Image 1: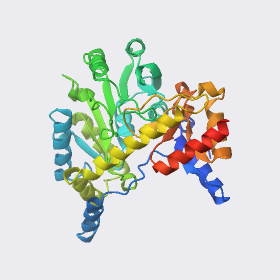
Image 2 (image 1 turned 30 degrees about the vertical axis):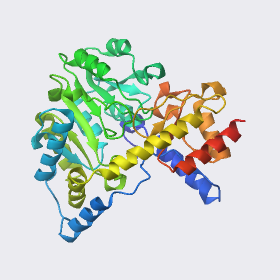
Image 3 (image 1 turned 90 degrees about the horizontal axis):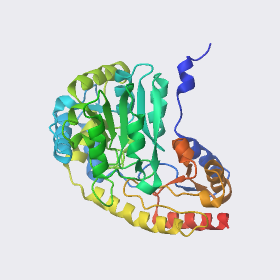
Image 4 (image 1 turned 90 degrees about the vertical axis):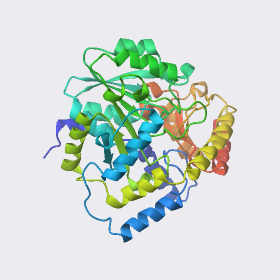
Amino acid sequence: MELAQRMNRILVEGAFEVLQKARALEAQGRSVIHLEIGEPDFETPRHIIDAGKRALDEGWTHYGPTPGYADFRQAIAEYVSRTRRIKAGAENVCVVPGGKPVIFFPMLALLEPGDEVIYPNPGFPIYESMAGFLGATPVPVPLLEDRSFSFDLSILRERISSRTKLLILNSPQNPTGGVIPREDIQAIAEMVRERDIVVLSDEIYSRIWFGEEPASIASEPGMAEKTIILDGFSKTYAMTGWRLGYGVMPAWLADAVNKLMVNSNSCTASFTQRAGMAALTGPQEDVDKMVSEFRRRRDAFVAGLNTLPGVRCAVPEGAFYAFPNIRGTGRESRELANGLLQEAGVACLSGTAFGAYGEGYLRFSIANSHENLMEALERMRRYLG
């Protein structure tokens, strides 16, 4: 028996591969500092855990409605309406297990073979993976270090064609930590407003920013009705293991996504939705403290990276990553990342794990303690000589 040919077009997520290698080294007694996984190193806030426990005790352990519970979807709609300054209702909200279904399901509902999907490169690898898996054509647009890892708008304009069906934006961005400037968001909206193009705006890091608040393209005139907002609870509330995300999109597309949900997952776990309600409507101090600590780590780690031989690093404006340029070391990205893991005990990702335009860069997650980040810098300094 053989797998279907489409399985040859599906990619993997490099962070989990590196994590497996790092765990194998640790099993041999080696010390490894984990800067590869994009997961907050904070505990889920106590009031959210308590809400989840209470939900279990109260019997929220059975099937729920496929789109998500009505009161939860309404709370999400009100939050998104307020924060993005748009008009969204419960009918626009799809509650799903994690953020990735908001990539996969809308693509599955929208794309035909030969359609083109424009996406940021370097970027989250699942964008390219899912587009190619579905027989669409992934069209990368490079993110430029000298534009704070935003698009060159002239290149983006050139790559929009009559076959473009979907444009993916991600701000704050993984892996670079870049934030698309508001004026660029406005220019992109002008490019696509009158075209038959849907925008997938990945805003999973919407609460983790350090300078100007990130703009959502859904807020631009005429764009809410053709934008899919991807957001969730994993990053903001340190709830990666709870598997809880949502998409906000036009109702006609939400109906299609819900059909795919019922055919695949039936529904999102009921008790996690109760915990999500507590996260969204409860105290936000833990989020503020986490972001403040990420800022402190960012400042110290990036400053340290900029003292390493052959390395320079732009200051990321959001998320919890550093994306240094390592061309001055004379090493290729994958080679250097592997050397840092095997010889220095520092686990990070090659920029090429996020696409071809990531060559010459590494990605470090700063979701580790300040002490470990400083130790990682010293290990890298010794390794680089």
